[in-house]
Image 1 (tube, rainbow, N blue to C red):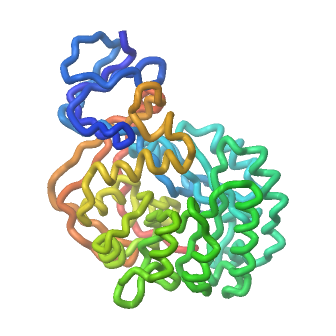
Image 2 (image 1 turned 120 degrees about the vertical axis):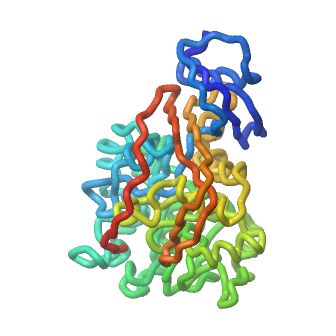
Image 3 (image 1 turned 120 degrees about the horizontal axis):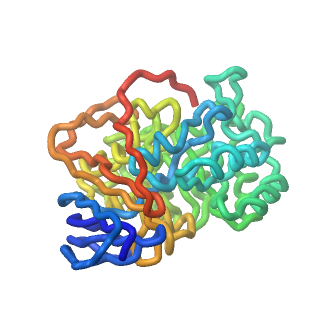
Length: 394
């Protein structure tokens, strides 16, 4: 007797090399069995998903979910869990000075599973040039205290999985503090034994400089932007330094965001065989009413660009789970994993897709979550947010 049986669905689980018609059985909050269709078994509840896709609970690798403290922050449950995302990685919204509050009021409270990067700057993302005072987090490098980073990481190793820095000129006193800030972030990551994650759009540093400070397993986010300090030259060809970094194991994150995803750059790099390791939304206050909306809309854009659905699912399930070092319990439907499950309807039609530069392309398919389960329990869904203009700051 299973607790739950999800039947009549097309299961895609890249971690288990499963791609076909199966039923998924759940007991005690974990995956109990992957069964042949129409198996004769009993369950307390059976849900017929009528040919839709059953996939591991989606993981959004790049979000900002510390509302009320960071001006970027939004609530995790309505923006992520209610849109098919069962686990998220908060991308350095909190630094060491405010991480205890992030843990107490968000990580330990919300239904969404929240992991975190720790910002090298202790104050995290509480201000930016568009706020008052208009100070980026690298305005004063005294906030980038390596010893404080080590203390906070050691207390929170169950949720902190990396060290984050934003290398952008106007966040670092017109670039004056970028090189030193990057070096401090490198030192902190090495000290605590965690990956370094770097944001580079509009950096005063060269991409060659940034990548030279990154190691195998580190992550360059916003990999498909068209701004300074990107991966391509003026002809949209992959730079030699970028190829060398990828060859030695530096990882790429999409991080769509308000200003960091360009259809032209993405299409050019995909045609050159440069695939992101992680497809993520970078959802935050300034973009969840457009152009981002939710993770599945970012996934739609990669389907539009020609990526096959199983590869899109791979980059939103098992690959981020491996980075989180939770691959036996998250991002998979293997027996014994947490029963975090998303059911997706692949709809056909004509769907406007907008990149961060404001360009619109017409997609032919879109994904819509129809059921979400967190540890085997159903979660209420919300519709995609309505489109409306948002003020922009960084």
